[in-house]
Image 1 (cartoon, rainbow, N blue to C red):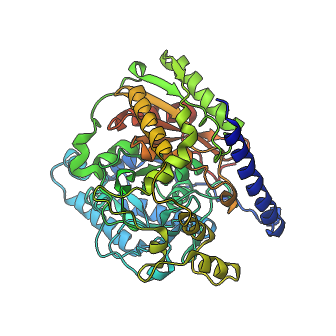
Image 2: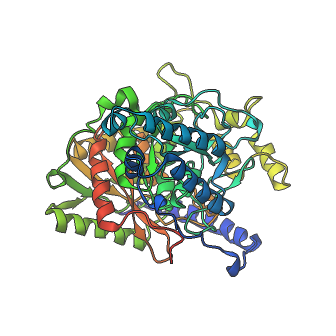
Image 3: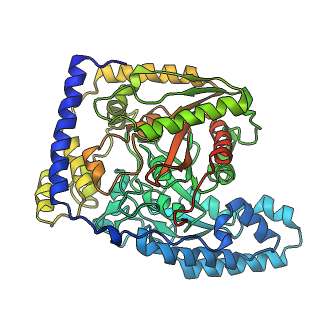
Length: 529
């Protein structure tokens, strides 16, 4: 799809400016000696190589105790967390006590395994939790220095439901500052590293979850997603994640709160290493809204309609999709056609080139009563006055600001926003929504790149800040998406693809995830030779 002259000029100017600043960044960056880059230790305990579903079954059958499983994960976290800095606060002692109570409950249960499976499907299985979720007794800061010492007094509904199903939280994991950047870094907890390469980002804002799951320090976890915050960490760390249809899983008791119309775009969902855990986790997390989804419906993949979009058509703001990601998506198409006998139709939707502008516009819309969303500067200044972005930038230059560079830049970007949204961008979104809804219907599945490239090196997203639009646009469209790993690329980093379904058709993308895991191998041990 050809760009017009103005768009070509915008693209050239944007990339020239970012390239210039990137050269300056590279010049002043300190380079780590090659021999200092360490690989995570390989997984040696076989309990760490089983899904949550399998572990729960073994615990119920007394083939292994919950204490053994929880201790295995505590040991793994203690092995890998010094490298990845993913778990920022643990509750190991409490978790072991809860595991002991689980084992006692199973010993005393007289109703049989079936009763336990029905009532407590995740009984005794360890769980990691994103720090932006309220987990009683754990910090709830999202990396904001002014919230240091804030402790959750209740559990967020999805966490409460998982605990009620028998899952045992081990601790909370790192996020980007206020959950609004694709690198999990803040001045309260520091920087989190990718499980496959410590010099690379784990994604954000659920980057701590992605990292500890990818490192086999957890088997299941929970994330939230308003611009790709589940899917990017899952992609960069080679695991599965699901962005649920909005409005199904409760987003209450999370920080920061949504405002404006942002609750229409925020989704909460499961993150895990094994695809078979996605559906049971979603059933639990959805709670009373599970009936909205057809999660008990068997899916015949041969009867689905498949589509593939290889890129956004050439946005001025995003970089081109790398060859290895184009190639792996093409391989998925070839395998679907060969294995299932289906025809995967390649589609081009011209409105996708405006993905970032659409996301940015709709995130700033007022609610239905006309009240605008809280500004990022207001959230940065909590609990006091809004932060003054220019002053914070000056302070950062001399190392005195409590805020990260991405947070300050976002506050500065907000200052450039016009009061009224562009009618052209509103029109592009409405046309894209109509086309996508008609395309997918109730039996369609779309393959779309997760990001233009594999996990970037630390701080490099500052110079390609809008590449998240590949995930963010699907938040604004309100579609369910399952992020699926597809093996490792030429640099040993995870490859992957987004599997998109129509609204409330989450069961379709979850079924495709099971197929892709079987076909491409799913999660890989980052410590393996």
